[in-house]
Length: 130
Image (cartoon, rainbow, N blue to C red):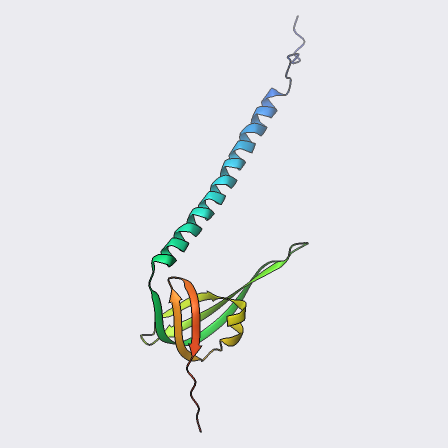
């Protein structure tokens, strides 16, 4: 006579299988995102290394900071960017270091040195007006 209850050795086998499927899917997704970020970073690094070092006359047209993180117990991270406009009116925004960011002023004219998307330096052209 059957009582209708599961009297097997693993009464919750269905929920364990579902947990394993969800856990496996999440692990694969997280691993995929990490692998994607590593590959994308390597491609950018490789592309920058193979690009020629450019020295072009330009003008600084904008500066900005981007703050990320900083909620709860985590610390904030600040990224610094400058936008340069060349003589042909094309613009290029590059991430610059905190130290260089302080020396770059909007409206400055000078020579930008960069390699791909990598900022190498900016030397201001000094002009004294009487």
